[in-house]
Image (tube, rainbow, N blue to C red; front, side, top):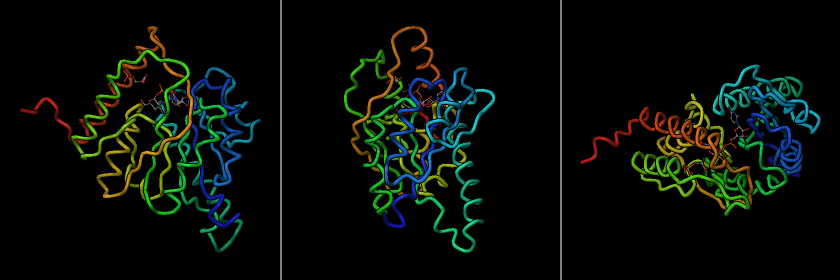
Length: 250
Ligand SMILES: O=c1ccn([C@@H]2O[C@H](COP(=O)(O)OP(=O)(O)O[C@H]3O[C@H](CO)[C@@H](O)[C@H](O)[C@H]3O)[C@@H](O)[C@H]2O)c(=O)[nH]1
Ligand SMILES: O=C(O)[C@H](O)COP(=O)(O)O
């Protein structure tokens, strides 16, 4: 394994993923590119933290739910703390411990997370600053009507010219420069949309990469629709805060 081989740090934000997180962590830990997996338990009411720890992840806990973007920020901060400790142990060569890239992974992918390796190649080779997974048709059908996806796609295109196939996809690999360009992260469910806008606006390359992933799809019940309403609000806010004014179009 080369020096770069295990230099990706994975961050997995989780709210109530106890049933799925062990498989997800095991699959990500098995990727040769990945050196560490940090799970952020974002105020779960189940055993997510314990299960993730038992599966081999470093775990940080939010005592109260703070949303996906806050969980990602906490996870990256924890990666950096762990690196500082490791660098102190390895004396004068922090380069050997600093991650070459961050891999953002949802907790619900289970063993399909084993297919995430394709996201890291372009970033580690310097061909892209951020890669975004595009998912195949899901085995479980969802209840979405494309409203949130359409909003995010239109806003990103208006602000940057980039037409995203799956603008909400949370599985992303980022170079340290891409992460710096996108911080502070937009709140809640706006984080992916804002990441794409901010990284592109920094003049960096963004690539969508097909990836064989399956995740838990939101349904048509009131819970699913409430979830989509929250997504819509956060994506809208992220876009407006970045200067999108759709109501001004002639
Ligand atoms: O308050 C929360 C809610 C969720 N999660 C975790 O965030 C991830 C994504 O959540 P999920 O409910 O699976 O989101 P989806 O409905 O599938 O949303 C899609 O759209 C989101 C943006 O709106 C993206 O973050 C997701 O990656 C994308 O799959 C999962 O690991 C969750 O456990 C948190 O950490 N905190
Ligand atoms: O189910 C989904 O794909 C997301 O929750 C987004 O919902 P949408 O279909 O309304 O864009």
